Length: 80
Image 1: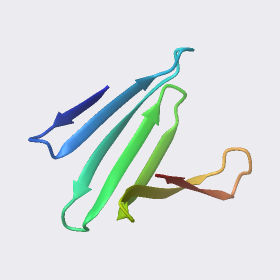
Image 2: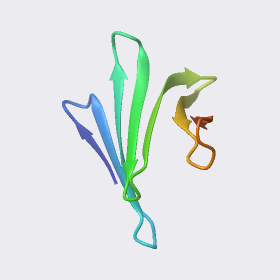
Image 3: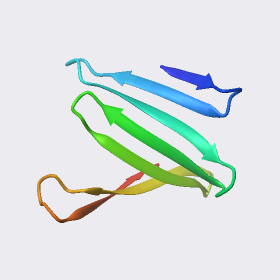
């Protein structure tokens, strides 16, 4: 489900999988930095923050997160 909020400046997306796992993302365009920002949270306690913008006609968002399987390592997340 996708909803727009705050006069269309924010998008709220919610997702639920067949097994009951669920998540939501809040997406906003930061006019000062001229970048899109996404914060994703889920029912497993996960948190993912990404930012980016259009590249070759596609939305590309990236962000770093600590690797839960390898303490001290950072994982680069990228979605298109």
